[in-house]
Amino acid sequence: MKKINQDLTVTETSFEHSLIIGTSRMSEFDGPYNRIVECFGLPTVLDDPDKVQVEWLVLTQDGVAIIYDYKEEYNNYTEVTDWHIGGHNKASAQWVLEVLTYK
Image (cartoon, rainbow, N blue to C red; front, side, top):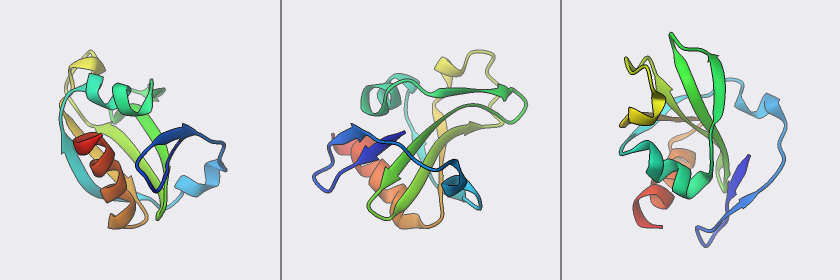
């Protein structure tokens, strides 16, 4: 899992998987797969191609956020450009957007 620090730098951290329980879509990011990889590294590849193929888990100053490709119709997730950002609140999603947009 990646962590966004106060100064918008991104570092590696550990986490409790239970942190993602109860998250939902809070925002969206319209951009290429490579931009997310550039900021947060390679994603976790999931075994559910009908709903979510890949996701990134990010710890922010306001809680956990998840970047994922919900129900995209691409066979290759590297072609996706419409990403969902989930979390427990909009503030956690805003941290992700700040890094993706300004870093």
